[in-house]
Structure formats: C-alpha cells, structure tokens
Amino acid sequence: MINTNNKSRRCEKQQLAKCVDDVCRTYSPIQRAYAENLEQDETVKEFRCNVELPDFEFTDGKYTTDFFIVRTDGEIAIRECVRRDYITKPLQIKLLDASQRYWIRRGVKDWGIVVNAE
Image 1 (cartoon, rainbow, N blue to C red):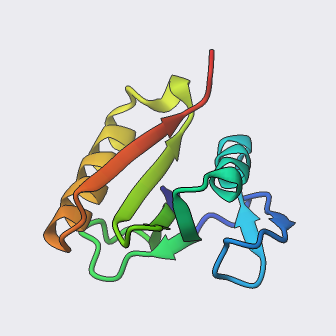
Image 2: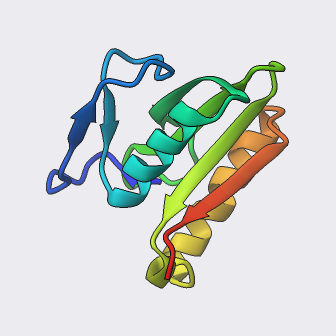
C-alpha cells in the first residue's frame, strides 16, 4: 500500500502489455518484480497498479492498492507488496488489515501479500 501524499517516492515506468494503464508505474523493487511476474502469468488477463481506494478508513492521506488483477476466468485478485522487515510494524499491519476488509466488502475473495525474498 502506498500513501500518495508521500512526495519522496521514486517511480519507475515501464510498458507492459497486460497493464491496463498506458504505463506501469512501480515504486519499489517488489512492485516491479511482481508486475513483471504478472506479465508472464498465463492466468492473468490484465492488471492495474496503484489503484486509489476511495472511502478508505485511513484519512491521513490517499492510499492505493498495489495490484488489482483480473484473471482469465474473470476472478479478481488483490495484491499488496510489503518489504519483509516492515511486515510486523504496527502501522503496516493496520493498513494491510484495512485493505483486506476494504476489498472483502467489495466482494473480492482473493486478497494476498507479496513479500520480498530473504
């Protein structure tokens, strides 16, 4: 999850055929690697990066979900990218729980976390 009010984020842009947006913008090595994996995944029809969350329960900024994925069978999946050393931080846990609740309320059953390798 990304707080879009943070102006110090470094953005990498790349063209990926399955990315619905004109340009796939990633803000971390985990996001970039996962976007490239989605591009190669035959079960993925299309995906969006950094999808804004209107009516999200945290009001200290605008938050985005890292990946909104549409599979070839029409199922929707959500993935949040987190660095391994941040996964146990209290704020990160609150944000991930809130994201999961947000998407479950919208009928998404496949919600998960992408973590970097050790």
